[in-house]
Length: 281
Length: 288
Image (cartoon, rainbow over all chains, first blue to last red; front, side, top):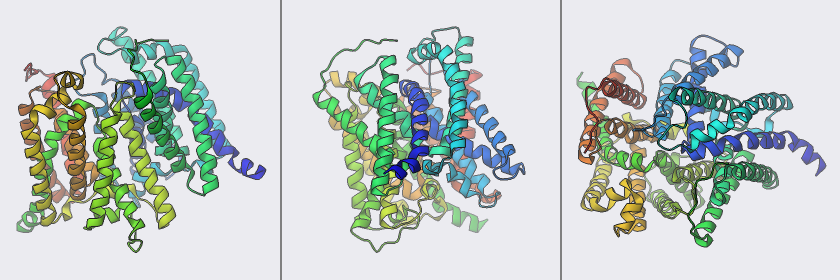
C-alpha cells in the first residue's frame, strides 16, 4: 500500500492542483454557459502547434510551443471581445464555431505535416499518471501567479459573470476585464491539457461546480464546495482506477459524471421547489 | 470534368440532405443553447454501438467506433436504445430546481460516453481509440443507399416536426411560457431530443460529426443575424448551406483537399461575410 501511495503521489498532487484551479474557473464557465470552451481551446492549441511545425520549427521545441501559445491567446482575445449586451449569437455557439473551424483547418493542415493527423488528437490523450514533479511545480507556480491576479480582480469577474443583459461597468472596462479573464483561463488550459488530457480537464471544470450549483447559488460556497468535491472525487477516482486496473483519466471522468447525474436526480426528486434570489457573495 | 461530376454528385446530394434537416434543427439548438448536443448524441450512439461488442465479440475494433459505421441491425438497435435513454435523461434534467444549464449536463454526458467507451474498449479489445476518425468522417465515399435511407428518415421527421410545429416551436422559444400555455413540455421535449438523436445517428454515418456539427450551428448562426422569423431563418440557412456545399466541394476537388473540412471552411467564410454585411448595416435586423 505504501509503495502504491508513493507511485500515485505525483498524479494525486497533480489532480488536487488541477481540481483547485479548474474548480475555481468552472464556476465562472458554468454561470456564463460557455461549457465547451476548454475543448475548443485545446483544439486551438493543437492547431497552433501545427502552425509552428508548418513554419519549420522542430517538434517539441520551445519555438513551437511559443507559436502555439501566441496563436491560442489571439483566438482567446478574439473570443473575449465577442461578449455584447445584446447577444445575437450565443457565446457557446461562437465556441462551437471556433471548435469546428479549428478542427477543420487542422485536418487540412494535417496533409502537409508528416504524421500530421497525430497532432489533431494529441491533446485528447494526456495521461496524468506519467506527470513529473517538475511539471507539477512549474504548473503550481504558474497557477499561483494566475490566482493572485484573480484575488485582486475576482470581484469584477463575478459582476460580469452575473450580469445578464447589461454591463456592470463601462464597455472599455468590461472588455479589459474579459481579456484578462480569458487570457488567464487560456494559459491554464494550455498548461493543464497536456498534463491531464482534454476530458479530465473538461470534467474537473464542469462537474464539481455543477454539483455545488445544484445545492447552492452563493459564489463563496460554490467555490469551496467545488474544491472539496473536485479533490475528493478525483483522488477517489484515481484510487478506484488503480484497484480495478482501468485508465485513471476515464475512471475519474466517469465517477464525476455519474455523481452529477445521481445528485441531480436526487435534487429533482427530493428537492423542494423554492424561489432563489440572485446573491453575489 | 465528367468524372468530377460523377464522383462529386453523391457527396453533393448527401450534403444537401444534411443541409435540409440541420438547417432547421440548428435554429432550435441555437435557441435552446444546447450547442453541443449533436456531438454528445453521436458519442452516445457510438457508445451503444461499442457495447454491442458484448454480444458479438468477434467484430474487430479498429477505431473504437468502426463497429458503429458498419451496416448491422444489432448496432443500430443498440445505438438507438442509448439515444432514447439519453433523450429521456435530457428531458428530465431540464429542471428549474437545478440551476445548472442543460448544456453542462450534455457536456458531462458527452465526456462520460467518450471515456466510458475508452474504458470498455481498453478492457474488451485492447485497441486504441481514435476519436478523430469519427470526428472527420468522409463524405466523399458516401453510398447512394445511405443517402436514400437518411433522406427517408429525415423527411419523416421533418413532416412530423412541421405537423406539430405549434408544439416544438413555442418550447424552443420560451420553455416556461409554453408550459403555462398548457403544452406538455416533457413529452414534446423528449420527442425533440429523440428525433434529433435519430437524425444525428444517420447524419454522422454520412458526413462525420464535424461536418454535421458545422451544418447545424453555422447556418443557424448566420440566419439569426438577419431575422427572428422561423421561416425566413430556415430559408437563409438552406440557401447558405447549398451555396457553401457547392463551393466547398468544387474547392476540395480543384485543390485536392478533404471535402469535409473544405465545406466547414466555406461555412466559416460565409459567417464572416454575413457579419461584415451585418455590421455595415446593409440589412436591418429583423423585428418580426
